Image (tube, rainbow, N blue to C red; front, side):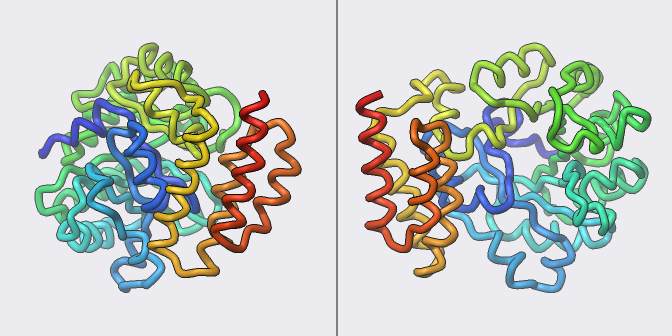
Length: 319
C-alpha cells in the first residue's frame, strides 16, 4: 500500500463538487492554503469509452498538485480499467466515490449505492488498487445507507486490507442527503478503529467548526466542500495563515484571477455563462446581495464581471 499524500491525509483538502471545483477554482484554493485538491467526480464508464465530457474533467495545472482524481461507478472491472487510464496522467492519488447520494448516481448503482453492498465496495477498492500502478487509492464514504444500515466501524481496516491508504467519512447517512447536523459520533467510531488516516467531511461552514469536528472525531485531516465555494480564503484561516475575510482589494483581485484562469480553459462566451454561478457564490452574504446577484447572472464579459465586483467593493468599504 502506498501512503496517501500528507496534504490529503493530514491537511485541508478541497472536496470535489460538480460545477464548481474545476481546475481554475482548484488553483485558487491551492493559492489560498488548500493542501490538496480533488477533481470533480469522473465516471469510470465514461473513461472506458473515452467520453469527451469525462475526459475534460481530467485537465489540471501542475500548480494544483497534490491532486487526486475521483472516480465513480458500479463494477470493479470498470474501476480497474479507469484506474489504469488515469494512473498515467500525473495524478497523485485516486479517490473512489462511495458517498454521492444523488438519485441519478444511485440509479446506476454507483456512489452511496455501494454502501448497500460492502463486499462489492471492497472489490471496487481491490480492483482500483490493481489498476492504479502504485498510486495511492483513497475511499470516500458516508456512515451508511441509513441509520438501520450503517457501515461497520472497522470499514477502515477492511478498506486497508484491499489496498486503500486513507478513508474519508462524510458524517451523514445516504438518507440524510445534506440535511441535518453531522453525526460526529459515527466518524469518531470509524476513526478510532481505522489503521489508515481518516479524513472528516461535512458541515464545515466555518474554519472553527471544521477544526472542532476534526479534533472531536480524532480525524487526521479535513475535506472542505460547500463552505469554501466563493470563499477560498477559508483554507488560509484553517492553516493559520490569515483571516477568512479579505479586504475589498484582495476580494476583487481574487475573483478576477479566478475568472482569468477560467478564460484560459473555456472559450468565450461560454466561460462567462459558466462563471455566473461562481460569481453569485462569491457575493453570498453581502448587504444588498439580491441586487448584486441580479447583475451577476447577466454577465457577458470580463468588464461586466469587473463592474459587479466594483459595486461589491463599495459595499465592503462602507460596511
